[in-house]
Length: 281
Image 1 (tube, rainbow, N blue to C red):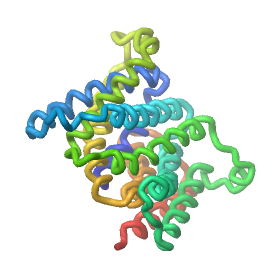
Image 2 (spheres, rainbow, N blue to C red):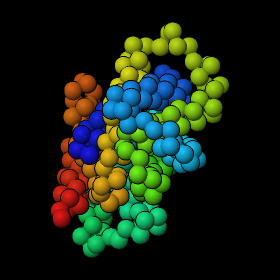
Image 3 (tube, helix red, strand yellow):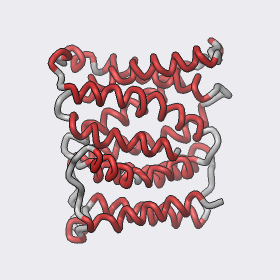
Image 4 (tube, rainbow, N blue to C red):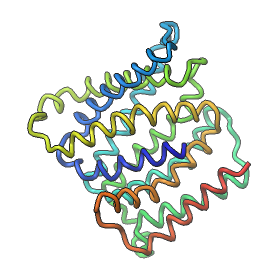
């Protein structure tokens, strides 16, 4: 999950740089087909493929549809949201995931976990509103952040659903079914956007982003998330998302982008404190 959070963070920085260059549906349809090829290769290499693992196709379509919904709204939100701000919205997912984990799996929340989620949520709001108390009181949240929030709700529900719908399939096998289903859903609903895209004239950075999101932010992170979701409570799995704003700051510096004001560092500090509280046994 530590690796997961670092790889996911790269999507925010790269995604914000190309979000207005290509339709989110088109970008994500291609990245999921590439990702499906990579995960399929992993399934073949490990020799874990069994046709019986893909019984109950509706499970994969449901999870794949939720996964696709999240990524489309992420890139839609990044058209206007700053990467660090969007990653802060992402850190609200543990709170939602804990609620979904209780509803779907009856996973109970201890007082320490509730405290950690509250601290992490406060840190996220600190970053989202850029340490502006007046903006918080007016609840002036950007359009991009609002759009992406609903994607994060889908992502938070996805985590406990994996555990509920998995029937003993290995993580990489289950991931392959989910990624293929996501690609099918996006191709079906995004057919017009895919057809309208002038693929030959896309800037090189778009292709870099597609390859990065396909390999690292789809194939690799999907396997990591499936692996962790089958072994950890939903709230603890999503706890690592609290590192996203910190990783994004590193990505922004590495890519030569402008960094947000120092005042938001306090909010990032709270998210790291929340992570440490959640990881304690």
